[in-house]
Image 1 (cartoon, one colour):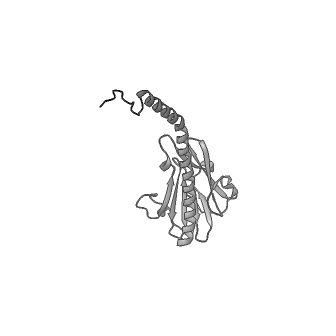
Image 2 (cartoon, one colour):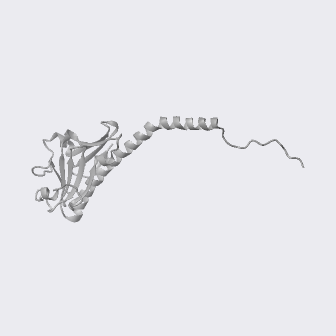
Image 3 (cartoon, rainbow, N blue to C red):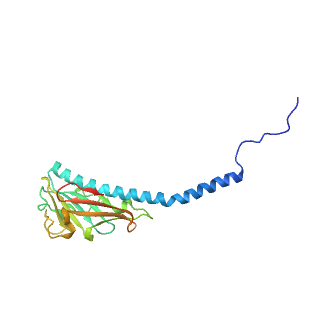
Amino acid sequence: MVFSRSRRREAGLTLLELMIVVTIIAVVAAAAAPTIGASFGERRSNETALDIVRLARRGRSEAVGYGRAYLLRFDAGGNGAFELYRGDSNRCNNADWPTVTGGGCTAGNLACRDFVVANHRSTAGQQIVISSEGGASIDFCFEPTGRVLWQRGGGGLFSDRSVGDAAMGGGGMRFQIVRNGGEGVTRRVIVPLGGDARVLL
């Protein structure tokens, strides 16, 4: 019986081949990282815009369904936030909104139906900011009759007219969702006085 002294080379990678593969993967990952980060930021901006539309449409439909006025409040402070409240009356100007909104959308306030806060979608490197035209805080009120009224910044009577107010030009208020101070695509949402909220192209 004869034993062969030659050994077949076993399949596998040498250390040099493995280092080359790891280097290639690192270069590709470094090149793709900014693009991946930007796409995540764009997705968060888009989701925020869709959340605002969902919130406004919910307020309008629940006002009709429950027979009560609903308040959609935009607070321009910080990075911007929307809060939706169910009123204690079927008329916007008859509801006791200071009591209804007292404490904000905290766990104990049952009148708060939902909210959207820009900071919830922000990350350390991707800041989301919601702003209105003119930078004002504004309240929308949806009545069971289908009427949409508004007032500026939580004071005075609600109105369904936009005459004489440049910010309400075109019969509705436009909101912008931007990230990192204007980086990337700006999303725009309109909440009209006579229709459903929608994302503007």
